[in-house]
Amino acid sequence: MASGGPTSAKEDQRCRKKTKNLEGCDRLLETYLQMVPVDRQHFTAAQKRSLNNYTVELLKSLKDVLMKTGSTWQDSKRLSRLVRKGSYRRELKTFPCTPRPPFLLLLEMGKVFEEDILGWLRQIYVGMRLPHDVENPLSARTMCYCFRSHSTEAVFYGACVGSFVGAEKLRKYFIAGLKKGWFTDSIVSALESVRDDVVESRVPFDSEVECSAFQFGNKNKVFDNMYKIGPCYRCKMLFQGVNFTPDRNRSRGDEGFEWGNCAEYYAFSQLCNASDAT
Ligand SMILES: [Zn+2]
Image: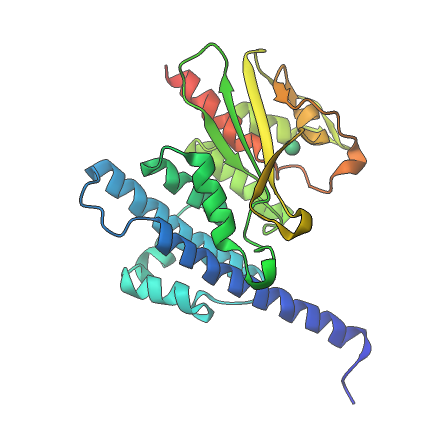
């Protein structure tokens, strides 16, 4: 009898992860189809191009996520239908860069045509939930925004990378992101300077930079409740001169994220890039 035993328990767990990832992917695409306008007649040419680029990157990103747990993109009915319908098969093979995480891409799509980004984020998060209030493995639990006080510049958003990428993927993502302008030099250098959990080259900011991170709560199974959280231990170590709201000192033991997961990196980079451009 081959049943029972540690090997089959491991195999069961792998199988469950694979199924949950596939369900998560399908749910994310359903949310995408509900929220991103099909009728783009009123959009400018730049908006249309932008949405199309995000869509191709999203499909590529989902393909990568599925591969991580041993599925192919053809295993997801929604994904293969969308690839066929939009004739994206060639792009899926040839799209050159390391894609951004799917949740972050949905966030970015909202920015193309939606003013209320926090409302948009909440809708994505709620829309992506799996049955019985199970959290979607492709959801980013933590989001953040940052801006410069006394400035008319926009507010910038980021979502955490989550647990769907491994350390090596994360590295590639940051290096690709440096070229693409997703991350600034200072943030990538700071991440690369980490030795034994200490940042040797911190990211300098002036004290006008303000940042709030928030999570969607799951207290009493109410997932659509948003609340502000303090920066994690690693963000406090990585950044210098940022006004975090709330400025709660969390100890190392408070959180289980690896370096590189935080929502702040993306939001801060966007803020830096916008400031450099003016
Ligand atoms: Zn953090």
